[in-house]
Amino acid sequence: MEQFLGLPPDGSAHGPAIDQLIAIIHWLMLVLFVGWGIFYVYTLIRFRKSRNPAASYAGVKSHLSNYLEVGVIVIEAILLVGFSIPLWSKRVDKFPEEKDATVVRIVAEQFSWNVHYPGPDGRFGASSIKLVDSDNPLGIDRNDLDAKDDITTINQFNLPVDRDVIIYLSSKDVIHSLSFPAYRVKQDAIPGMSVPVWFRPVKTTDQIREELTHTYSVAGAMKKVKMLALPQPTGVAVSRGMNMADMVLVMEYADTAGTSIVAKGDHLTQENMDKLADAGVHEVMARRAANMDKYVVLEEVKDSTGAAAVAMHDVLLEETVTTLVMMGKKEINARLSANMETFVVMKEYTDKSGTEIAKKGDALEEDVITKLASAGIMEITIAPATPTEIACAQLCGLGHYKMRGYMTVQTPDDYKKWYDEQEAAINPPSAPADTTQSASTTTGTTQAN
Ligand SMILES: [Cu+2]
Image: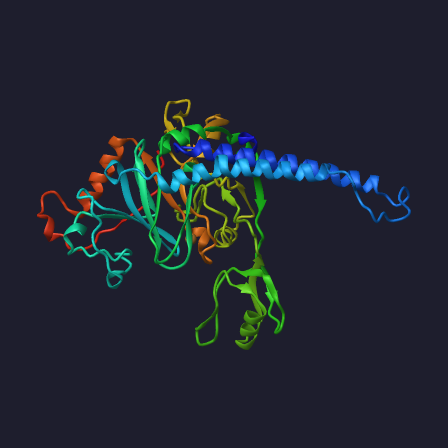
């Protein structure tokens, strides 16, 4: 059932118990769905009008359905009392000792995750709402003694594997929901409250990425290569009130005083037509909108001076199409973008002469795909670059989809290295600690190796 549900790989100690509960609930729901479905069809046939011309006022006398109902209640009670409640109580009650855990504060906001580490002293420094600004989103008071060594990151949460983590979760604005899908953690973040959450990661991000390794067909991506005919510019008569919004201007037009009326790349909307007519322009050069931005160019196009006007793998934006048609290009060799940049290659690949195309951990950019194909490598192994993400499981606003952070579960050594680097950025080892008063914030980056 767990494979069938397509759950992400699990990297936490408590994850198997949650997955098991999810599986059992789905089994029960499957049995109920099939059972009630069969019962429904049975009643349609058994109580059909031709067999029962007169309504029965006594109804069904059998107690079978009562027994079934009681049976379902018993199973649900077992699930609740035997599985859910013990699991839940362990999550909320059996907190590890803070001294044996990685302790952090996570503060959600529209639309990012702020992570606050207490630093080597183990004490969170004071923070004040008055100090909150874009450089110091948590308002940490760096004059406070406890705050001097505090580390803050945005959208990047590093932690060591095989050690309990305690998170004090809150929110600056609306209700968010902290979710680590690969670690089976989900907890609402409530403004004005500090909600403790704990779990124990038992797999590193690298290990989870290895589990998600799969093959990718370079041949499949290259199959979509084709010569695209480029829409050629033609003269279009300007006529007031006419709407030709699917036509794109290939040059700028100005009025007699030299003031620009419409720019290159503008569409011939009714408004622009009227403006042109007002300025006394009778004809403009325009072309049909290409709508080719899902394609990448597969050849380099040089202008008359020999400079590259369009490079390999440029996206065929309208602007690029205009550049090409104005150079007299009638067609261009292109292929559908593979959009695989969020994946990394999991092996080293070299061409026949031994030149490296990509090493393990490199992002699967368009040029890597083309190079692999031209080297005759048609199948590669890849994995998601960031398999352990922080998602917001709450529709918290229009930018909700942007609210993604990265979690990097590391070996204790790698974590210590990262931690020391962060610490050194705040308090350079050479300088006395109290000379660095400014709040330094490190912005999270995607770890992709
Ligand atoms: Cu959110």
